[in-house]
Length: 203
Image (tube, rainbow, N blue to C red; front, top):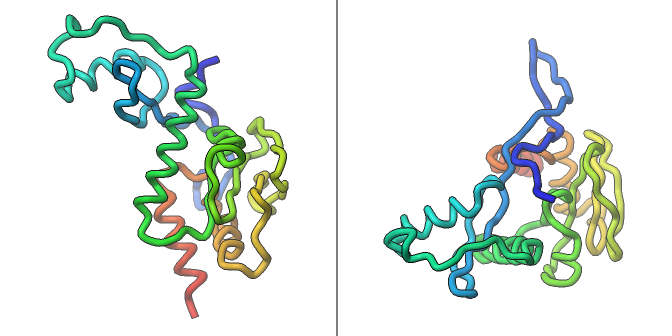
């Protein structure tokens, strides 16, 4: 079943000086792996839908083809789930390689990242936490440890287990939770991290 282009997510909205916890539609962004003659070509981030048109446009823009006459056939793989997982795997690996410092922990949305990505395919030497709001459908996977964040109500699925209470990873997570940043849209994450880190390092 296709994923919605604008799923409903939990948000915090400010009106008349008051914070209200609500739901809103937010444009989805997911990886799409493109293959040419059966070989991986590129991974792009896009809002799901019209993937064939997007692929043709990218091939034309990158001058891989000169017109649609150069295309013998195009289709969405029957193994779309495997292709999507491959895209997530490549994207996660690239993020680690591009990072200038070793992360304290890895946070991801349970509705977007399958648990077997870190159970069977990627091994990372830091706490991994899949986040799920109360309205999300997510289940605890084997090898994960469940926890419930106090504010807002978010389910935490840790692998291999939650960090120690006084560890830097735990302090960072608690700081993000207190400020309501854990389920923020992607573009606001850097600001949230900077604010949380500044608060934790202040004398």
